[in-house]
Length: 373
Image (cartoon, rainbow, N blue to C red; front, side, top):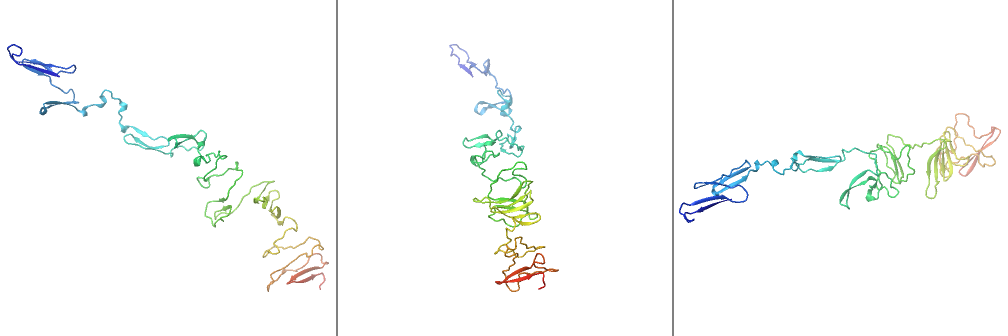
């Protein structure tokens, strides 16, 4: 600041004109008073040192206005400027890494999303050392854990290796991702036993019919294919269908032997029937019936029908029996038709043979002998 001092004439005790003086006051800064020339007090002008400052004579308020021109101030040239604290946001880009999508420059808010579509597929899993990221609700934070620790159903399910099935159970369906591509087991690694309530075997394609609701095994084939069950074996091996219940483990079986090349049908532990490539045989001679006294076959068509009793004549009351229960009019119990000479009876011509016919409770005999009578 500066001060102006004025003294009137005679105040100092002398006779003369007025005395005017001025001086710069203050400890620091630049004084505006320059000098006194005669009776003239001279002051310095206030000047703007650069375009960053403006000085205006505010005559209306008797003021000198000093202001900063912000547009002319170079921010980067100011003392204390740090380049890394002043970045052009449009020149900085955030790029999503592996497993993420989104990003962009920091000139605007950006969002990143988890996206596994561009990750490399890994089919060889080290469940003990490979980890996955998860959100731990109890800790309220994101955590990681080894794959072997991941269990379905809140810790009660099987792991991906099925290595913990001794203590937990599979709690969902095992479904292949693509039909007709994945196997259960392999040609060299077999499952031991399979316990299932109902089994479906089939192929793709349109099928006809509806499976019985109480069936335990449903084999569904495409309409264009043939039905079949293939059983593979070798010498000294047998294959078959075996039937049992909780009380009896040998209700029956249909078994094929590669050694004998025949099928054996067994009911309740007893052999009933043998089927070979040449014959349809009972399990033992003269031990099984074809039909019964109340259940009859309707008609039998054979190229040659041989009725033969190999027992002793004295022990067999009837060598061959032919009977009919349908006695309606017009039915014939026995009809023998041949293109040549027909012969009833067996044995040598010197022996007599008798044919006994039971009709409506009465027995009739036909005697065949070597004589013409």
